[in-house]
Amino acid sequence: MQAAPSSKAPVLFIAHGSPDILLQQDPVIDAWRGACAQADGLKRILVVSAHWTTPALSVGGNRHRQTIHDFHGFPEALYEMRYAPPEDTGWAEELAQRLGLALDQDRGLDHGAWVPLKACFEEAQLPVTQLSVAPGQGFEAHHRLGQKLADLREEGVLILASGVIVHNLARADLGKPMNTRPETWARDFMAAVDEAVAAGDADTLCDPMRLEGAALSLPTTEHYLPLLVAAGAAGDDRVQGFASVWRFANLSQHSYRWGWESVGFRGP
Image (cartoon, helix red, strand yellow):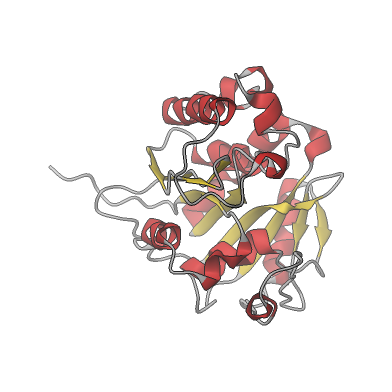
């Protein structure tokens, strides 16, 4: 007997990687699109990006529909790309009030947000609101934020968290192709996080620095924090990994989706 379609919008954690992935024929892009393919009936997207860090958690309204090119040294074609979803400042204000968070209506979409969005929702028809991460507030605060977002899924809001679990650019080998075997510290840390995600083990996810390889895998925490928001919003939903490959030896592209039943999402 097939499970009934879910009435909740899904949750995604996408490891966004390098922005020039949009210029390549890349199987990771295909995996991202596949993860979004069943997401019918959505009303809007709430994206949490590692590339907007603030002292206090904040909501961004993107009043000017701005695409932020917050990177250097890439092909000119990337700087010409734009992603301009419909303006949704009213909902951003409501969300900030609902969560008790600061509001920045002028904040546009950084590449942690618009790169996966452009790959998965190229036509930009759905309104997009962004949340920051606040590394100074710690791990548990981001998991609690995710829990507060869970009810939005009943309203047709796709929660898309964009970061990278193993993110140490100093130890990335830019000459290595995709799926080159990572160093032991990266492999061990990713395996422990993957196990915790599969088990719904919030205690382990919120205490990552005790895991083997954590010091090298998380020299800073901003790219890990979106995973905690996603896990909090997902609750007990079934999780499926995708794009579970390595880039530049030690950079993980491991991504997750929660909340899809086998027959797909059907919105409210």
